[in-house]
Amino acid sequence: MEIKRSDEEQSSEQGVQQYLTFMIGGEEYAVSLLKVREIVEYRPVTRIPRMPAWVRGVMNLRGNVVPVIDLAIKFGQAPNEVGKLTCIVIVEIELDGEGTVMGVITDTVSQVIELKREDIETPPAFGTRVRVDYLLGMARSGSKFCLLLDTDAVLSVDELAELSTSLPTAAGGSETPSSVAGGEIR
Image (tube, rainbow, N blue to C red; front, side, top):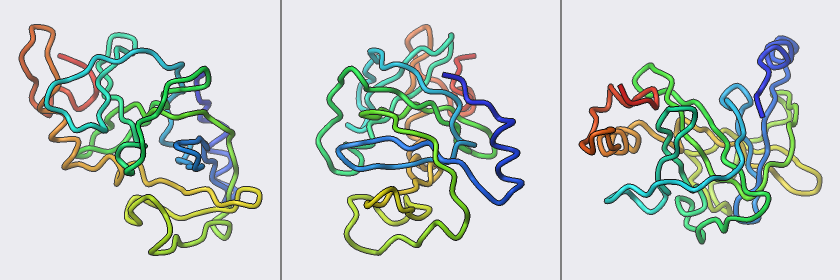
């Protein structure tokens, strides 16, 4: 599923931002649609030795190596169980001024919501499974709240640099962070 940028640009001009909502471990999360490149059906990933448990491995996305992250594990929950609705949301984050592509495993993708700045509340310093510095805020979603993730913080530079240095090359060695930063092997 490709994301169309023209709708996003028009919405941001009107003071409204769009967010993609998805479920992880029974909780609803959202990321800015500007960060989402696409949504792909879950496919098996290749495990990488000596990676943190929250890094499920890497996948081949049209010839590019894309790290796949399980935020459930990172947030201290049980690993995501793969089901019929499991998806990988492909997001782009900033790493040393360059866009880096990552995949995030979700139980299911819910919807795209539009939020005005006044619709977003500051998250409490307690009561969430997620570190507050991973959140941009929270928004009402029906009778519950949806947690707005800061993808650049959740998938931080330090963690990505560690991840980038461990990705395999086609020959079986490891790449430098700059050669894997765009998610492709050069």
